[in-house]
Length: 219
Ligand code: CDP
Image (cartoon, helix red, strand yellow):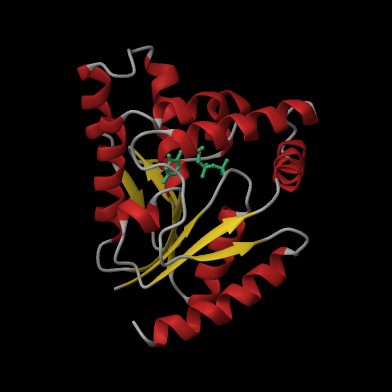
């Protein structure tokens, strides 16, 4: 098994970078943000209290499966853009604060990653979920650049939203994610901190690929 972890704030480019790196390395890829988003989506539709036993039980019984080509299925259903909406973006950090929910998602993430060569992305993967990972990367970028990326992403999917609202979402999640008590967003002590400001996706992937290949040789 070889674990590569990629953590970082909202819109830092984690998903595109992780997907491309995994492909180039011949590894699988897991986006743990999608697990939190799926949980938030299920919660919105369940109309149950977030910390209720009923909802926690429902989460524990939810199955998350990764197919050979790294597609994620939740309770047998392929996840799509329904979890990448501003509505989910607004509540997901609130849900991610709840320790019992983090415990469930952490356990499920470890089960999926077990014995694989895999790139796992999130907020607390290098610090809490897979602390013995071979390579840990922490991606950063300015708020403006991250908001621009997220705005373009929303626009390309036809989501009707103002740029200012996207800036607000990013700042809100930065604050929530980095100040929460359990597993806050922060680089692991031995993480490589990498700023993606002003770099194209290809540049980021190419530089990180070289770094990872060197590190993996020593794992
Ligand atoms: O893609 P984006 O940067 O918007 O975020 P995401 O990776 O989809 O994650 C959505 C939210 O889930 C984050 O803002 C966190 O609140 C939460 N999350 C977390 O707490 N821990 C993780 N390992 C991954 C996501």
